[in-house]
Image (cartoon, rainbow, N blue to C red):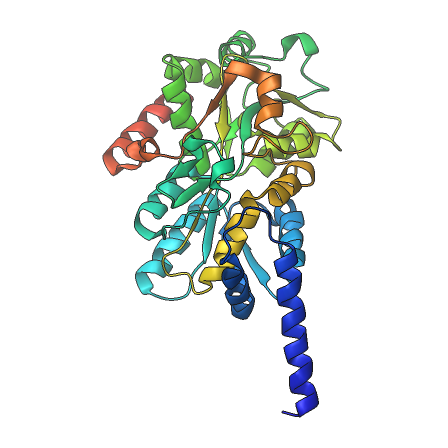
Length: 362
């Protein structure tokens, strides 16, 4: 290597490191620059995520701009695929994701109990206590779960504003709603299963409510995108247990898609993230997690990706503070803790699916 080329490479390295140093948020530990330098040396972070690439795009761009020299290798999967792939790779001892970021809170926490490394993020003090589990798993978003409906085909006066109102509407017009009501297939979607269990915990009459909702017949799907597309087109008329973040983003450009926030209770999902014990790019993974939780990262999520922030200091209304002003006591955040694991026990899970199927097929 020529002396001139060597000097150029050294200068480039110093420039990248200096750029990253100037971008560090206030209040970070004095030795955090060592993590930055090591992360830049690693050169990439591998993220396994259920957040679709389009929504995550602004966050990825912001991270790569903040830490020049680190590339985000982003793998977008559904929740079941992510879980199975990560488990098999860990068992095989091969390469895998450095960071897991999943909307299926229960399966993500199950992975974290076995595979997450302990890491106390410097952003932890800005998060609700219920969003942090043992300095290992972190809730990263604050996403209400909503109803969606076709605005052309559902009269404004019929739009349900509670789970009981949804059941009453469909049970009273079963012919109109025959095979026109959509929700997650809880056997194929880890997220769908988790949300159903949380409904069951929130509503003592859940299975009766579900049976009334299903009187016209359910059209179950494995993805939010498919459900929104079918409701927008009129193939389905109404959907429930839909991620409000995706619905709000689509509704901005889709005049057919309506959104209703249930006033009896509104579940709030928080995408769970953790760093793998076996992370090959350990330092870059820490930088990524901290960036996602930071004011800068959360502002991008809230205002560019339309994914509500887990913080309460973000400009605009798309954070905990703004949503609390909108929905108040109806909000029921799902905590990142061991209660998520209860229905993942095999027998309990199978019994629950059996009971759900019996109600959903009435």
